[in-house]
Length: 110
Image (cartoon, rainbow, N blue to C red):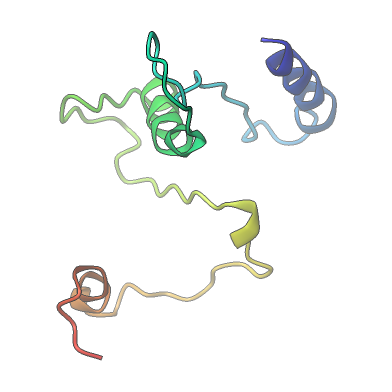
């Protein structure tokens, strides 16, 4: 809670003055298992925090196949160490689908 108050104050002072598209979302800590005495891992925070954000901001429910007005929107999550220095301007819509899916399934021979 103390860290959240500090982050909210920084956001209000430095970011909120920008266009209203910039928002802040606080998700619960997902790196700890309640009641368990095991080591914590920060690696669960990103996937479950992202799910928490999608469910609480856009109305998606991971347990159902509900539809929302945001179904055709694109969300790109970028880690700071993978931040691009130039905008994404290429149009990849004409590429065959197997160019992308084959890479991830390992079925495409290089």
